[in-house]
Image (cartoon, rainbow, N blue to C red; front, side):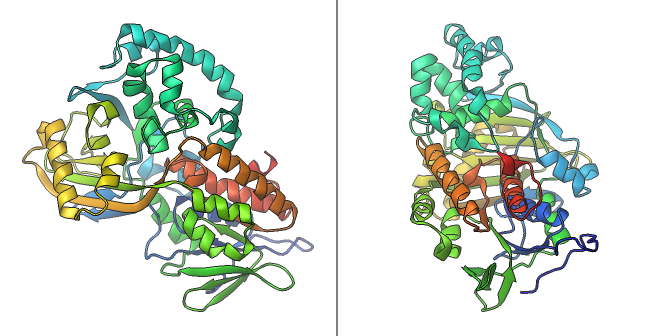
Length: 465
């Protein structure tokens, strides 16, 4: 491995650029590397696979931009839009393409209006009397608000002792739980309402309240692809371990036996891989944290169709109460310079957690057949129009934010503060530390980089929290 020098515009008497290794070429790792490089560090990004992107890889098939992770953006995303512009991708990805929000009730897809209590009462399955109980939600959000921070979710650990189901039972009732709170929490917590922490719902609602949904016009997979190229990411470079270097700093050893000496390490992998790579540097409490992080299986089917599946892009979230094997789908008609060409379209289905668990040992072709059958039943307009289908499956794909996850995260963060004060310059980033959205993953990378920069004498935003 060879450290790639970045000219930081150093001046006489200025400190020598710090050398940093970022392990993992997903969104979090690339964001951390970008922030470190922009601050003047020499950065090497090491990725064990052949491509950048992690969960957000993409491929082009016959003119369709297929992505391995469904990412619906929000108009109030804090990190993605700025980073897209820094990478020079604004003309290709922005402004985001507006997406209509919808839900499923008794097998019928209908628009949802969650921007007001009255709008929620008109959502199928909720009803007027139950929906009016949501008048309590703004008051509760004011109460919880000071501790809700999507970039530092551990701040809400004090509220992490109820599930979404318990929270709904206490304040709102079962129909609000099933058709309002549950679908929102599912995308954040990746578990059922009985297990998902209410903090996951509160953080998700904090992001959704008064926001607009959208998708990147050319596909978000272009973001990690371009970032990896700009950063000179080293693909197919699996890291075996990180060890302290005599006299200070760290030695990063690859599986091929190559070594790299650096001052700072950011480990932006999944939790079990992070534990393996940094094992000799971790405290017992950190080992326990990584071992206990809940990660659930993921399956997603992307279907290309030869005519528009809907009149406008539509994001449909499906309640557990509907008993379906999916919990979300995104239907996109083609558009000029978009992910699908004019006159065609794309539909992405996300398997519900219970279905993903139950189908772990099931062959791909069987899972694909079940998901296609579900799609044709929920969206009959696609029947007979499918020209390509691509299934993505991961046995440990998404973090599960169940009750207790945020308290564990708070304990982990306290250990990080202690280790930083003791001089350790190893940092961690990833969606299991923040949340499953692309914006949260990027924010986790920025946060790790800012903490590292603060520790080596460069001011940073998150490090002062």
